[in-house]
Every structure is written in C-alpha cells, then in structure tokens.
Image (cartoon, rainbow, N blue to C red; front, side):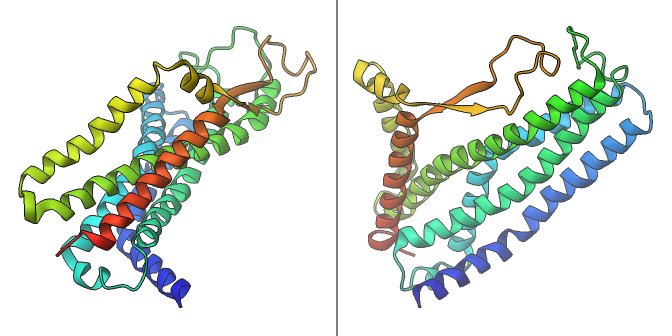
Length: 281
C-alpha cells in the first residue's frame, strides 16, 4: 500500500515538472543541435564561441537544476494541494524523497542530452581543427585519428562522472532547500516574517560549523581519507597517448563522501520531522 501511494506521488510530481523539463530539453536539443548543424555546414567561425558558451552554460546549469526543481515542486504543493498532501499516510521524509527522486531523474535525462551535445562539439573540433583552432590546442600535433580515439575513450567516463557529480551536488543542495522551506512554513504562524531570518540561520550556522571543523587536523585527515580515482581508459602505448599525463584522475575521497552523505541524510530526516510534526496550513 505504501509503495503504491509513493508511486502515485511520484507520477504526480512528474506531471507537475513535465513542462519545465520539456522546455529545457527542447532548448538543449534544438538550440544545441542547430549550432552543431551550423558548425558542420561551414558557418562563420564566430559561431564557435557561441557554441562553446552554450554548452558550458547548459552543463553548469545542471549543478543547480535539482534544487530549482525541488523548490518548484514544494512551492506547488503549498499553493495548490497542501491540505491533501499533508494528509497522506506516509512519513514526511519519504514524501520529500519522492520529490528529490523526480528532480534527479529529470536532471539525469537532460544531462544525457547535454553530454551528447558536448561530444558532438568536441568531435567537430577534432574533425575540423581549422575552424576550432582558437580553442582546440594541439601542441603535440596529434593526428585526427589519435585525437578521436582519445575522445571516444575518455569522454564516456568523464560524462558518467559528471552525472554522478551533478546528482550528488544537486541532492546536497536540495535537502537544504527543503529544510529552509519547511522551517519557514513551520514557524510562520509564530514568528511571522521573522521566520525568514530563521532560514538564513539554518544556512549560516552549519556553514560556520563546517569552517570551524576544517581547522581541526583530524577532520581534515578524515575528509581526505581514501582517495577515489577515475580511470580514463587510456592504453599505455606511446603512439596512442604520447603526453606525460596520468591515466587516472583524483575525483573525491571516501571520507568526504561519507561525511556529506551523512549530512544530507540528517537534513532530509530533519525536514521530514518538520513536515510530520510542525508544518501547518
């Protein structure tokens, strides 16, 4: 029964987010696709800068898109269906988790489109080096075949790691957005406009606490413990990759991953507690 209710809530949020998701996806596909077609057909070199800015902006936007979606879903509940939503026989943190899941799924699908767009642009940079000569440096004069082989080996791994990073950052920011929104809702009848000040305190105090912890040697050691490296999938053959660079890159640490995951889980549970006990219409 609980799973059936949760699934219905997910579907409701998917419908609520559908328009925003489709608009952003259309911007990526139509805008980015149009730029790629223009570049491939021999358009002016000025279009290169526009394409680079477009792809960079789309990729950067994904890091804040999850909290934006989560904020919109919660705001919609308060404005339309809050009386019914608060009566759902389910723990608050599970209902909030559903909104986070829908937001993450939406971001994942548009990230795939953005990654394909970036891959197409990089492939054009390899195939048409004269057009991209101002931005595609090749100091070692690698052949187009070698560059294409490197791109096909490295890009899927970087794109997959980028998705993990986007989802992790988005989750961490989203749980704080939910906590701030619920804290304001839970205290607005007693504190009025002062409840907004409480929201700033909820953000500033943990930020100050984290800054203080970073001054502790033991905490710094824990955060750096267990470095995680991303293999780039490059063969060791000098003819394949003649540059003196590592074949893997450090991307995170087990200690910091555990810490931020624990903080996110605690914030989500605190938000669920506020939704269950304190929030009033």
